[in-house]
Length: 314
Image: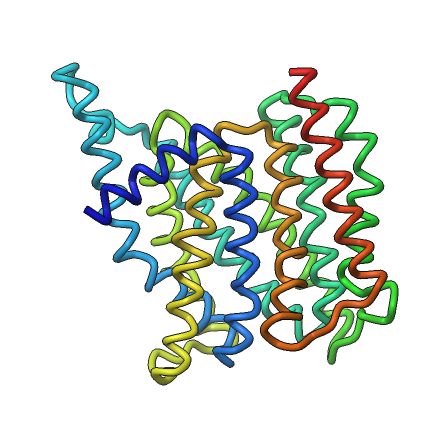
């Protein structure tokens, strides 16, 4: 019964993609705080958050396949059996990039500071629409282009960089890691949107998560190490990351993304640093400054302007 209810939620997510993307971004924003509370390494956190999400994602993917085959009503065979090889390549590549983003960004937080790493990784708001333009010939509307400077300004203010938030132990290396994380993040978002088309959003995301888990285990073990027995307390926090970040958060994003223009999805994902700032204050006692709050307001206002006006034009 619970699986059917969750499957119904994913169906509603596809029907209200903007709301679902926004909710997904807010759920994902809880990941940073929960990973901080777990006290685990980047490889350990990335591996466990994907692994612990699989028990929920596997039955949801099976339900999606069953519903699709039911709609087929004998038309040839289920489309899953005839899924093109390109679809599997796209989903697996997205998983590898997702793992790269998680590992690199988590490392960059300590090396260059949470503020600057947040700024750099969120240049996805430029890179994802650019990829859509170059690959899919999907030009962003003029309203989005006009709002870009204010969106980026909002991210800078919300991150705390303007108030000396660019600290860290190894600034140069951390900047490199954050830039590479931004590239991985943008590629992951672009491929996640493509892989979820043709009614395979949940199955696509399942394979993304499997690929991310394997990549995190291998790359994490080679880079900074993966603790396969981090303790029950750490596993408990990472289980919450899996629930809020992977199952509720990224699953909603995966289902909604194919139904939104690339620039709209990129803007709505800027709610992630806004939500992380609020949760950091509520859970960790990290009080945001007036400039950070102003940055959140700028992000929300600019995002609302760009997305609502672009939908009217469409």
